[in-house]
Image 1 (spheres, rainbow over the protein chains, first blue to last red):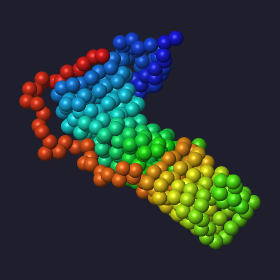
Image 2: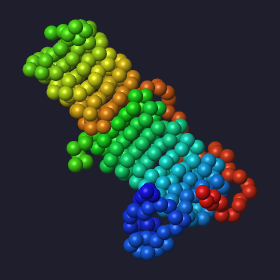
Image 3: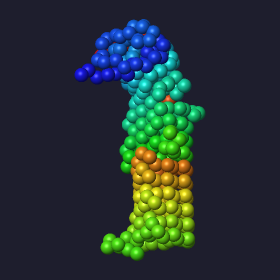
Image 4: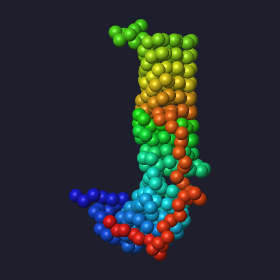
Length: 180
Length: 140
């Protein structure tokens, strides 16, 4: 049985399931043709790119302008301009350089070795930290600090897990009852 | 009362008001209004309620603590733990389901934090001179 993927239409915002992974498919609601390919950007980029697949801004690559819209977006390069919008997950790797105001996503992953600090309060569905993050977060789902990760700042959420070896230097308000 | 391992056990039907000091391991299943000072490892049982601070070597928390926890080694919060207070330890483990309101000071590495990754810094090297005029999208 082919795997079913969750598709976020970048035209109308409709979310639906689709089996397999053809190069393109039509949105079940607005009928627009959607790109499903995965992309890796490994040079300077000023163009916009929209896909229901995944995008990686490789180490050494630079986003100078334009917008990136994808399902899961991995940032290993530099974001100097434009915008990056992940429909699902945004992952920050150790070599990433970015301005937080240019990035958005439902789920956040801080990769091993990455060191990030966010200004202001940020809302996420889930957060996974294997590097270092200093932020004021409000998380509706789960917060997971992996071994070697370190979470600092102020954290409001429903579910917290910390692996042994994980660091936690923060003000916390963790209450599973608040998620019901 | 102590078990065969020398662990002191405060049963679920016991209520203590005052400070408990122990050089050996201790398990509390009852209620304590006061501080626990334990030079060894402590276990706070699922039905235990402690209104006071803990100073321990290590602690496994399954019940409710309203107070600060200071551990020389490890704090292990199980899914039924409810902690209202600050915690400080060398190591920490937290299971999903924990209620925790307070401040945590746990830094296993003890290392100083590095510079944040966001915002291009003036000191960083400029991008490569060969502008490919629009970038390259590699299709997988």
